[in-house]
Image (cartoon, rainbow, N blue to C red; front, side, top):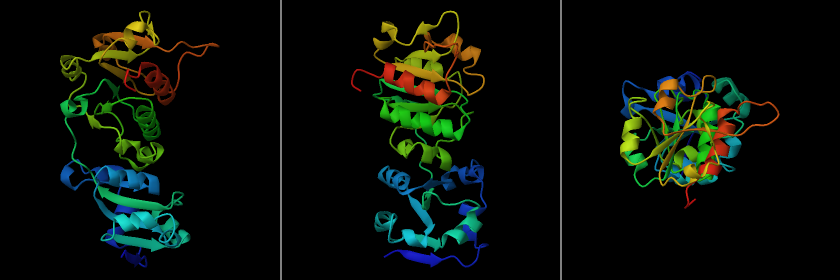
Length: 272
């Protein structure tokens, strides 16, 4: 039986996580074990639960208790469920709950780079990609198009930010990922694990993305850079390949999320 609590006091501390804490405060870098994130929409929440994430509380419109959230409530019978009509929740959160349901969850413990890459043939490395929407879109493409894992440098946006997870349609809970410790120094760890590295960048010595040498690599890491500057020169210099997507009509590049989808499809492993 769901423990439903009608919202009557906007200042209740239990609602801070939804109304007053920033994404950075939820992350809680100083006490990682207490870090939380917010999953939005039934699909994302279900995929987070399937991945073993621990729910803390739910926030939803009253109509969703017997509607879109019914199966979630059946899976989480012991946690508090805060509810009210749409206009009340809009005042509390500052935005319309277009997906109907929010769930606060404890952050899972981060995995090591070695654990993420074990058994992988195709991995993605994101360098300083800061837009949460791009992060979510890249994860969705990576999961759909045959990538085995994602590594993010410390300058990247968090895949568990609410917008990232929502845009990814919950695939941030389906594909293994972690942050690197030191970059680009960690590239040597990947190469020691047998990965060849392919930097998506425009340069005089770039090879086409359909180059048969790329397709023939048993283990390949695909590197994508920030939205504005792309990959750092020092990163490109350390990679085994520099790769370009052929362009037409005078267009010189694609948005990083669009480029990722093209690259993942073309460079997917033999078993994908």
